[in-house]
Image (cartoon, rainbow, N blue to C red; front, side, top):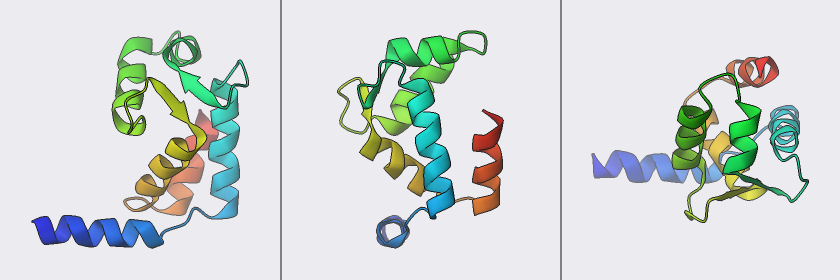
Length: 101
């Protein structure tokens, strides 16, 4: 099991988001980052999901994306998250999901 995990990490290091997907996820990042600070905080995510389970979505987002646990999601963390998603999903699935948000 540990071998698989390490193998997956090596694969993910070599993955790069295609330009069109990167542009879409960065557009979404900027949509959430309402104060243009180049980071997303919990207040911004709560506002973004104000009518769609805001606390639950915010908690899940920070659990999965904020890897340094500083309660801010930087652009680099955001792109790393979407690169991990790309490791498990097809490009068109990601593109479609991000477009619906």
